[in-house]
Image (cartoon, rainbow, N blue to C red; front, top):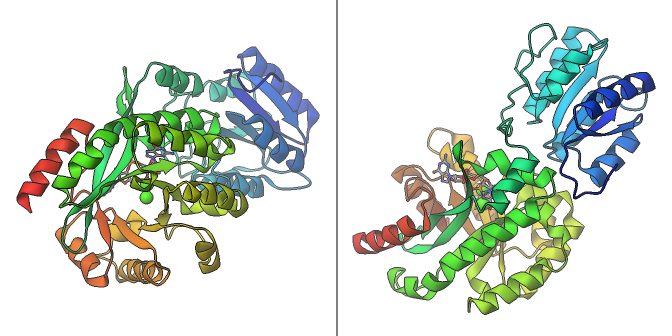
Length: 413
Ligand code: C2E
Ligand code: CA
Ligand code: CA
């Protein structure tokens, strides 16, 4: 095994049969992958954390833990590595495992029935689609719902894109529910790929998280967004009815390991003469609660410097009220899945209203995202939600288009 900086893809193999493990290592290394073979689930998770593999080969049946349990945990950890399921069991079990993996949003490369040929494994490692001879699960896990990275969009390609400055930040306005005044923007990253055009973050942020590039990505997004926002922050106040504007940026929990991050961000704001209070850092509910202790440290430091914190995608995780109170968030963002369906679903309306009530009683600002219609906007206003964001108000736009939108929006009000 070589150091983290090596950009070669890495295959972590979990199999209780050393012969299978060694055969896989041999084939994968021949294809240029780094490999590591472990035979227990415990060693597997230790290695997963320390080594950050890009590919995983997983035996479905093992003595100390079965593959389905391992996959559940991988899904819980939001693992983005490409997973090859290996097994000697029948196709019904493989089917179920594949379905379960796809439902959990794992990036399944395919299923390999033992005994397999060198060619079968080669094909999967090279990212080629699975042919019918293997019991490919019915729900087609080769393309799971959580948008897998394009075959060409591996870690090396993302690094190239970062170095070549191909990231672009777009901005989506947030408005006040009571008077429709502009309150601020959320910065959302896009990758302007020279061959594939604009690529959505769901396609490469998980890759960045899995490959250790997330800190570099986050810093780049912050730099671009702050450079755009700092000059208009004061000037835009006129267009926002005299109210100061805010800029929201998404933070990945995986970008937090760096202790200097908070200080660097504070320093950069100082250079740009931007008050930290203008910046809102959004952290998803799931990532904040994954490791509440680490999150508490980071969140507290950010708050001490004056930054605001927002809990994103609220309603999709399992935060307890106690955790919410303990972590010093200032804003709660209702997940768009409930907001988008608020008109059609009584349940969604109940969830949105409960979250808004909870936010209010905890003294948090509430923001609903995914507001696609005037009717939903009216509903939000009636239930006392503070702010709204969504296609009904504006789609995410480039910096220049956002400035034009600001003027038009101020004139129309
Ligand atoms: P998010 O933070 O929940 O961002 C909101 C997403 O909802 C954005 O998708 C936005 O374009 C979309 N959206 C906004 N209004 C509507 C609407 O009315 N209807 C519908 N259907 N969608 C709406 P986008 O830009 O594709 O971003 C997806 C996710 O990628 C974000 O979800 C966020 O988790 C992540 N992301 C985006 N930029 C960054 C970044 O710079 N860093 C990190 N770590 N993650 C990012
Ligand atoms: Ca967000
Ligand atoms: Ca969200």
